[in-house]
Image 1 (tube, rainbow, N blue to C red):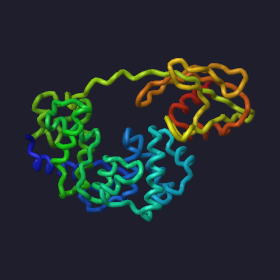
Image 2: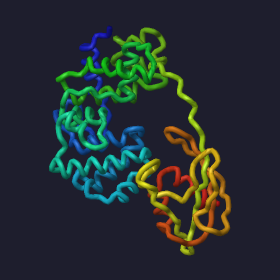
Image 3: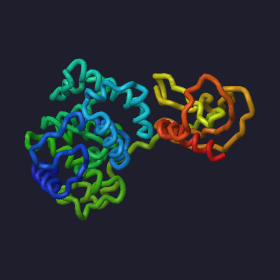
Image 4: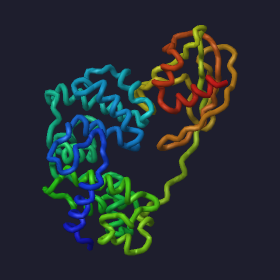
Length: 339
């Protein structure tokens, strides 16, 4: 059994010397609490997204909407356009719902307990724990993929993911303490991000190597064990790049529910094994090649068709459309414009 107090002290010492500088973070050991709005916003953005990709979005959001009240007042379409490119668009809808709940039900002030945060719309167990710990210095068990990886290696856990998650959460809870509860999860995240990486962990510089059971096996990268995933299904579809006489692009607003809900998009067919070609307007359509995209649960090949016409669409300048569209449609528009 690893020596939990010694490991905890060693990691916090390492964090004091090596903490990343991030726009939503207070310096380690400073005693300064980070604005809970910034913590919450960063945590929502970082779900399924890397720090380098999320940071520019965070800077733009906080410059444009510096408080949760400012964000709560924004139109849905404006928020969805600003989110384009971050993926997992249900997060954007939940972001707005949560901001409006904080503004209307809590006077624009985030609640400061894990239980109250968990009651907010769109806030799950991980985000509630992260905000409680980092923004309010509450002892909370903050467990993400980085923490799961660190714990599985520290304890050389032989149970595979995802079944091992309850045990990994129990092991992570052994380290939760009233001593620097806000710095602790951030130290774990930094260790998992920069040292205890998924592949080729840098055990030679790891502050926890002295007590790591996975390191003692000689094969720490073997952990965490994972159950083999089922093969991701593949779908096909048709996307239509329609231009009017002024060169504008015809866009549509996707239904609020479902994949890419509420986002702007190109007109498309259904996405299936054998999609039906059904152009949005009659006329001559030219095939412009295909683009590939991978979603969480399936991969997609979109065949792009280019045409000219008019109709009841959201006519948008091409550069504005490129900035507002989610990645899959931006790829298709770029392909169509290059044809």
